[in-house]
Length: 437
Image (cartoon, rainbow, N blue to C red):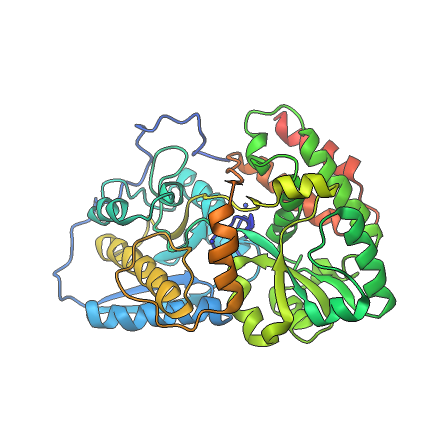
């Protein structure tokens, strides 16, 4: 469903968009990247196979789907033994380092940015011709083609999430005590709320900006009020669009108004979410995947809202232009795995079982692939609202920005906007340099 946010858009919390590219929209779809998938002879079907899997495993949203999928894998493929390599909340730095050293796990749960780097460096397989890919295409839920098929026409991994998006969560009790009406619709209202919460000793917005993708997602959220494509509007652009200039200025103003904690760029997800759950922060930014965790910790005191805009008329017009993009993501396979055929099968299987868990036991409708089992979960109230009030009314999603260097510039400079002293003008100057390269 970030971030990445960016995330988004964004597929996983710590490696999303959150957001050197071999795979751009100008690459012919018929081109054949290095490291084709089916070049290694298959081992006997019952031969023991050991595989390592890199994925997030630090809260209910990340650990429970993995544990479920592994349990199902043992039933389906008892000869496969998988070892978890826990993902870090490091904006993908560990995986990038392992690509440089050639020491990747067999299967990597990742996003489009990492896939592009991995493809260019011959570190991940192209899965176009794998039998699992053909079946995955048949079973995709409508509208999720971009989650599987990259902008260059190739397949680099198997997604489990559908098109996800970033929203703002808030503590209804703290809002009522501060006399703040929700949802907040304008930037001025958000600045006013920040000042009121600071006066009460409460952090206005908890954000885990130690991970760059979430600042990236925050910035795009404001941009989508003016430009529904979000960062997709940068494809082919020679300079920063006006919608992004305005969004950067708004984040600068919000920083000056005290929206963020002073140590926001040293704060990780666990720390930021704890501040929100404990009532020390009035708002929290994350993807819609955060709903079950927030509902579990705050019960009826938590609700979500869409991103505010420059004025109420703009907000009403753009509130269902969602801050999230259907970029490729999911389980990719290392080109250096010794068991390519088995690794591809397991990657596809894990993606299917992640989706199955999220649909049946969480109740989320935002999954990439059809699930033929019924929902057994008691669906959280916010998730029900999402399905009834938001998803049917979505007018657009942001689109993917394909230049990795531009994305890196946005990552770095959107994080800088969270810090006092960095200006929107500096953001634009730095981004323009990347756009002109």
